[in-house]
Image (tube, rainbow, N blue to C red; front, top):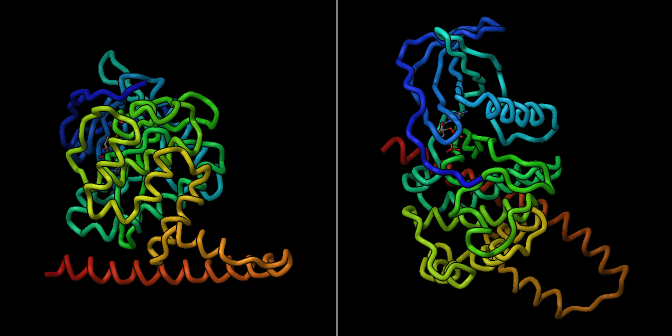
Length: 323
Ligand SMILES: Nc1ncnc2c1ncn2[C@@H]1O[C@H](COP(=O)(O)OP(=O)(O)OP(=O)(O)O)[C@@H](O)[C@H]1O
């Protein structure tokens, strides 16, 4: 189903107490956080703690999103979505609405964060996202409706988080929800079957969107139009090899995309690496030993590099907030 914009469905005033019919928990409305096709999300106070409460006219929306959040909480290593706190119904007069309460992810949406703190953050945040997405895929899910509106940069420490799990679909099914700009079907670059490469295409488009905050309309579509957009941006050109692979479905796993992005950050392009490997020929055992040594060294370099980059950006970020 394609997402279309809808006006705020609910108009619940500040101070309203939403009390659950079944669990009797009371939530005091602080303000609206946002609203979309599936409901309205409010910042609420629960016993002095902040939480996010999503209320919908459609009980099925609540049930399906709650089921995804419950599976996430059971699955080890999945840290993408907010944690689920409560599910209940709110009776007001003769009406009854379903709602759920989740962890409030406090932060700034991806694009405003990049605009304020600089493009240097983009690859770092994308690396974090690819790590979490890889874990989600390993648990058999595809996020589906990945877009900057569903990404919040929380912290400190800086961490990119996904909200709105409404589009999360088990691998192998049809994508439940999508937004055209981030949908490979719309660009004529693949199917709407839920598989990891569907999410990785969206990651590519999120990187493009970060450099084109107004987005752009599809003309002829396809990889030609997107390649032109990449070539026209100094920032995106650095990541061209990774972007083209992600946009044409060449990555089977988030980990493969993450590794290529790291190589670029490491000052080494993917093609350079391939050329180096081709030039050398070793016997089987030597190659294997070297490979395992190299992957160990790569792992250490990767960790050190991310650590240094995050530390530097972090200092930059804190200084930016002070001055
Ligand atoms: N857990 C949360 N913590 C902080 N903010 C949140 C949280 N969940 C949702 N929001 C805010 O509420 C907005 C709307 O939420 P959500 O995207 O879940 O609604 P939706 O009806 O599914 O919208 P859409 O049609 O855009 O998918 C989000 O863009 C975000 O700003």
